[in-house]
Structures are given as C-alpha cells and as structure tokens.
Amino acid sequence: MRRFVAIFIGKIVVYLSRLRGGGSSLPGLIAEKIYPSLVSSFRQHLRLVVLVTGTNGKTTTTKMLREILRSKFSNIVHNEAGSNMSRGVVSAVISSMSWSGKLEADVGLFEVDEGFIARLSRELEPDALAVLNLHRDQLDRYGELERIKQFIEDAASHAKSTVLNVDDSRLAELSNKITPLIKVAATREVRKLVPSDDELGQRGESLYHKDHEDADVYIDKVAGTKNGIQHAEITINGEVQKVSLQIPGVFNVYNAAMALGTSEILEVDTSSALTALATVKPAFGRTERVVVGDKTLQILLVKNPSGFNQVIMNFLNLDNRPVLIAVNDNYADGRDVSWLWDVDIENWSVADTRIITTGTRGYDMALRLQYADIESYTEQDLSLAVEDFIDMIPEGGEGYIVPTYTAMLAIRKILRNKASLKDWE
Image 1 (spheres, helix red, strand yellow):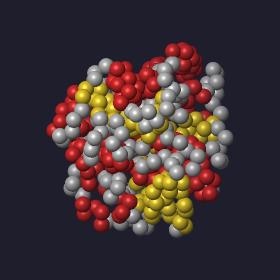
Image 2 (cartoon, rainbow, N blue to C red):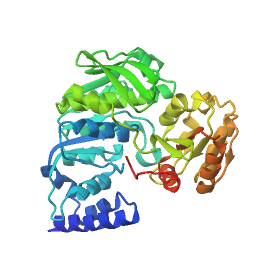
Image 3 (cartoon, one colour):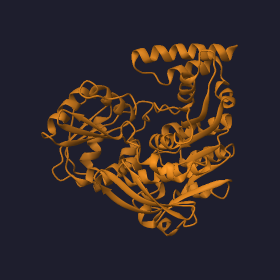
Image 4 (cartoon, one colour):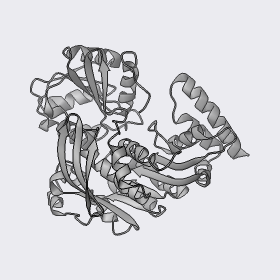
C-alpha cells in the first residue's frame, strides 16, 4: 500500500512540477520519503538496466546510448532531465508509470552521480555499468578520489557487466578486480588531449607510456572536425569503424567509445549503433548552441578543473570570441570553489578576448583571472551580465558562455525569452 501511495503522490507532484516548469527531482524526493524501498521495487518492471557514471560526460554519453538503444528497444525510461541522484531516477520512472504503478519498459537507462552509484547499482542490479572517468569534483561532498573509486568497485560487484575507461589510471587499477569487463582506451596521441586527473596534476607523465592496445574498444584516431562533423576511427573487437559525431571535442570521442562498448554488452548491431551516434546532438548546456537574433551563443558547462581545461583547449583557445563565465556555489555546483585554482587558466591564450564574470562566485573567478594576468569585469546580476555579453558579440558573430551547473540552468531560463529552448534535449 505504501508503494502505491508513494507512486500516486509522486505522479501528482510530477504533474504540478510540470505546470510550474521545473522540479525534476522533487517527485522522487517525496516518493522516497514515503516508501524508501521504491528504487529496488522498480527492477521487476525493467527488462534491462543500464547505469552510466563518472565525473565528466554522463549526460552526453547517456544521450548517445539512448539513441543507440532506440535502434533495438522501443520503450526506454531515461532521466533525461539530468537529475542523477536517486531522487532523479525515481522521478523519471514515476513519470513513465501509470497511475496504478504499472511500468512497461524494455530498458531503464540512467545517468548516476558517483556518490549514489553504489546504492543504485545494488538496488537495480544493472545489466551494464559504464564508468567514464574519475576527476576531482565537489570535494566538499565526496572527499578524495580514492573514496569514489571504492564506490565504483562496490557498484561493479552488483553489475552483470562493466565498461571501464582504462586510460583513467584509477579505473585501470580496478580492471583486475572487475569481471566481466569491456575495456575502452585510446592511443597515446589521443590520451594526451584528454588527460587523467593524475596527469592534470603533472604527476602522471609516465602514464602516457602505458598503452592498452588490448582494449575491446580502442580509439585509433581523431581526424578532426569538418563542416561541423567530428570524425574518428575506433576499433571494436578487432575491426576498425569510422565514427562521425555532431558533438565537438575529443573528450566526446571517448564518450562515444564508452557508448559503443556498452552497446556491445547489450548486443546492439555495430552498424546500427554507428548510424545512431551520427544523429546525436549536444545535450543541453554541453556545447549547446543558442541563436539570439543573428548572434550565436555556445554554452560550455564546466564543473571541475579537467572539464574547464578541456573547454579552454577545445574552444576558448581557438579564437577570441567574447566569453561570459558564470560560477555559482549552490549545492548542485559544490560549495567549495577552490577548484578554480587548479584550472590551467595561464594556458588560455586570450589575445583581445573580452570577458565578463558573474554568478554567486563571480568575483572569485575574476580574482583567478587576475592572477593569470587576464582582464575581465564582473556583473553580479545574472540577467544584466547576459545582456552585456550579448551586446559584446558583433553582428553575425558568436560568443562562449562558460557556466557551472546551476548557473547554466539560470542562464538558459533567461535565454528562453530570447530564443526557442527546450528544458532538455
């Protein structure tokens, strides 16, 4: 009875949340309070369960997997709103259920926060667990990476199969403890473009000499981007495949490789998986492009040093477009913003770039820039900062928005009045 009540009330909250335009995790939060065992009760309704975790790339990789799995499965439950704690998973499932609690689904596909992966894996017993990477992120919530690595090991013990990025040195340490396992890796040249956390700290130069050529999925080559399409070559079980992506950034080739490795576990035809990958567009806030009048704004979400460094390398260093950096310190962002000092801001070749900082920690960002001898100015009012930023962009030009998570959500809400935007894509 309590389960029925939890689902019924949860669905009411889903309906009310949609009316007010938000609250993707609130229904799950309330439902779990009423019936704490709700997550584990879902497993009997799902034919297959796929969990995706790691510091960077969860939303994009899960979106890739959703498109790949659509080629084989007709009904997929997915927390597409990006709420990846247990309450977000519960909300997604409740939204797909009937009022009586019935769920007809082939696959439950969920991106999961690293701090919740052990619990959700234990309760859902996934058929496939994809682990992307481990980087320092929100130390105030989870502590050091060795603790997160233990979460991953615990989660893998409840999964039928695991896909692991063994180019990440900490995940490679787990590869001898996890079975069955699909390994994902890349050539030394590619790995240098997407350094692990150790390599970011300049402690892991020797790691570049540790090749994993025996990997089941191996990135041979990233051929660059032409006409907006990124090209790569990936070997899958000994056969070289050409991969085309509408999503820029070498790190997204890793995400694609992880998605392909996971699709192998689920026995999706490789040709169908590659065709599906070519259709995937950026997830909301992750290299998403927004057109305002004749100006284009590209939103580049950052959450930690490694992600920010990738944004600098793959986008900011390529030209001198105006930049708006919005840093918040809300719970979902992480209260501790000391990670800004681990970003390689000094490697940003700013030239004549005009920069605005904003958000609750906009002045902290400005101070970090000042120490790198980079000029900026701060506008604490987010709406005014967005207006000033758009005014900076020349007619027909483009600019970059570099926000943390809650700042990204707030900026997209402001931009909805100027452009056609979905809550998520």
